[in-house]
Length: 325
Image 1: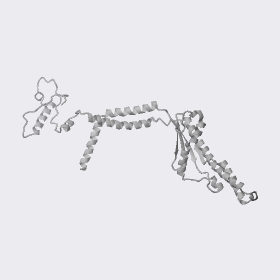
Image 2: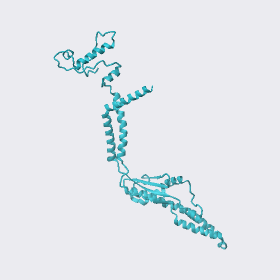
Image 3: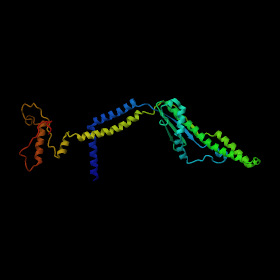
Image 4: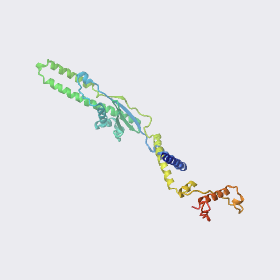
């Protein structure tokens, strides 16, 4: 059973190779045409796009713990916090600030549609990438998103500190003048001075570690990549066309196909006989020729077909090539 299966697979491979060789021009033309068209269209009709990326580092400054001895800004899960930062970079307020800062340069352009924000695994880096036909504009948009988000985040964090400061100030005002020399009053005053210092030093825990620069190399189109993909697709299409045409082709190309189609053996193959032979039979005039040998082989094989009943008559249905039989 295994030998039979192996033989079938071997025959299939041989058949595949035979069809491929016989129809090779279909495959070659298909691959060349599709690949050339794909690369040509990419080069002629695609607008060059340039990408620039700003790397934004998010970290906790530790000012609240260092000065107050406790975490004023609650830390969540690091990965979730980084994803939140990536989402907030594209918040409407930040987008409006970027649009306003770039002015007429982005008058008819959506800065949000040309910008993507991604996080980096195993790090606290947020990548802000902008794409534009203008390499300098792409760099400026990415940097503007980074600075606008840092400013917005700083305002938010300072707002938290401001609320804490106002709370302490209100508590100080509630202490009677007679108790303003108490330790509680002094501690509150110290906390107030500390929070005021933090308001000045607060940066939003964000820092640009790698500003975007104008790229000299376009990110798209990429004719080599496009050509490679088109090449792979064209091979699949070309092979499919080869076997489709092979299946639709009913012509007989060799004696093996005749034998397989009729399920009958080939008794002999008689070469084309020269038209000029002075009216003599070749088997008599040239008994040693390949023509005579072919007829002798035919005579022998006919005798072996049914040795018990010798054939008395033979029907010849076609005597010339290209008669359609």
